Length: 124
Image (cartoon, rainbow, N blue to C red):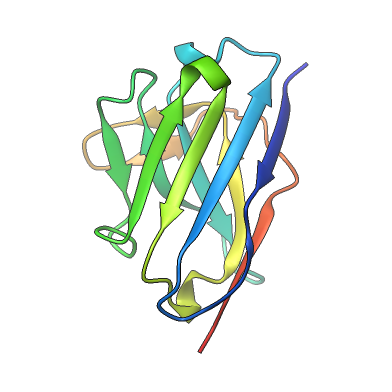
């Protein structure tokens, strides 16, 4: 059984920063490419950033490129998303994906286990 917990969200003013964390248990953490997805009401869940199992390859959605940084600490079973220069359009529920298909120009879910998500709200 895989258990996923996201944390670090909150309310921040435009231009501010947040760091999201995800801990996952019940899987061989270092064996999987992982990522962050987000979803707003009325919209489909979209991939934001993904990282290979060893941390050497990354993917970023065009909308967050240059502002967000994904990283992982396999020894701690933890995935991070550093979010800088936040904008109101970044407002969403952010979810940690435990298993993704990562390519040079895409990242998609591969039957991930999902946590409860962490809400990010950016005010103008």
